[in-house]
Image (tube, rainbow, N blue to C red; front, side, top):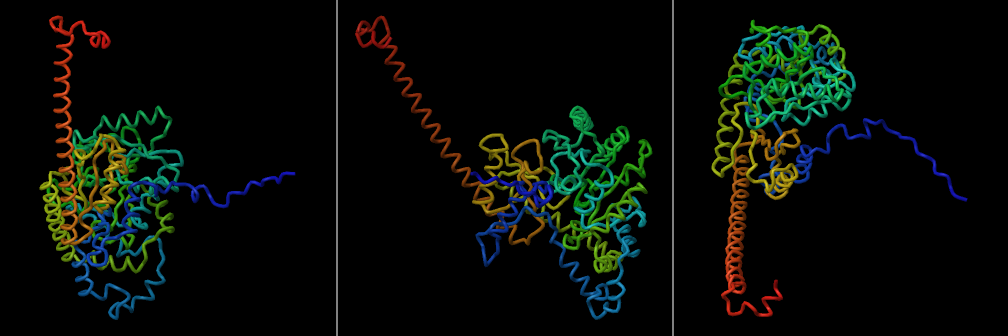
Length: 487
């Protein structure tokens, strides 16, 4: 008698057992490769160099010097410990007033003081990750979708989709116009979504762009505003790289467009900004994310939801003190731009020496590197094959374009601000060695191909001459039985 099998109940939720986090993406696979074999100048000099992480470590000394000069800004020092009890017990999800005031002022400063921000509209969250998710919760229901221009940050698939049930619909941008967003691309994506019976609730842009490192011009931003107004959908403007722009053209916030452009109509209730101190200040570990919405209902809802991801009061207190120091902020932003510009010049200059070009950019903490010429075929399979070589042989973690939903194979994001000058040179030397080796292999392959072609050509000519002679009516062997047998 057979034993009846009893179906085991599913103990965990679909979210827990699913792959909605996107951890299977090649973007995260690169991180795993680094974690298994991290580069260290003395302990592991042959390890993987991390160039897949968009961190700004170029200005840490400026912050450290400020903290040493302002010990009272921390509640964990002798000078500031008298505020420990008050801060440790503060848990209002509105946040410290001085923190919201300082952040609003800093946001204005990083946008050239061309716009002002209302501290009462500042909603804090656990980094930009938390800010995006909360915003998605406020604007869309499960099954609804946001348009997102490609290429876009792979983490959006996690941040906006995983727990909310929201979909992302790509707006295809191409290298032919340097991946610039166009009205035609927006319309095509919107209409395709309608055909697929997907309800579009909003458009998400990243300005400055991750991974491109470019800024949107005024015309494009006005096109975006006109589009979302016409379609009556929301606009989320991710501006977390606002202060990383180090040269012209300057960064233009969506806030500047809706406040100063008089020739366009705009329903401000549709506009929302996501900001953070992770990139501009180099504080990813502090988890300071900001939602700034012009919609009262979104502000109220997001503030209630922020209870799930508040910024610690200790961090708020420190940031309030630091960002209120006008002299420090001015010096920090100027020096940060200077150092980012220098690092960009050094890194892209090193790539140019070995024939590698990047998309022209002036912001972010990375470059969009063009390796299309190194692909065996113009396919994403070939791109991933090249990426695996770069990870496992060259020992550098860069992020393949396919993980950013790029529409064309051969592009890679490379971060350059998360390491010191020495490590940048080591990375460039590895890239140089790889390209030189690849060029030699190509030359040998071409030489062999040419040799085979010449040999085949000679054989072909010899064979042809012999056949011509054998088949000629004037040949003395025209009636040979061998000739007859061959026909």
